[in-house]
Length: 166
Image (cartoon, rainbow, N blue to C red; front, side, top):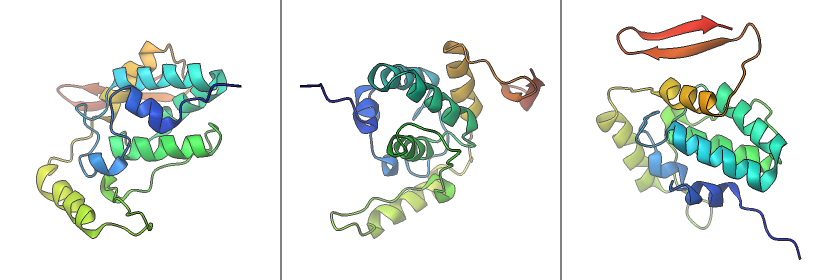
């Protein structure tokens, strides 16, 4: 009898994250929700559980995500899993990174939705986007080699984002 492989949600729980995108709703791409060490652990578990091709597709997903908020990341990760771990260019369509929980009947929970929207408006007013500070150390850690001619954005403490060509 073959052992069952970990699902994406099991993997996320294994590394200490909530598996619910709405938990992180509206907070933006911040290092306190998602960081490169979590991405590395998730990558390694995907590779162990689902193989090299699945882990390579996970890396392509991370490389191509416009915003690495935890809500957007989880939405894309679950889509990747539902696509048999094949990345097709899917991008999260959560408006402002706001995910809303559904009840058991599949209806949206209005209270959770309002709380997520209020959090996005009043708590995350800074609009922080630490996507590159989340992504770049992960890519360096796993030895990712970008395609020739592609550009990599780096975060510079004093001047915002800079790009360099490979």
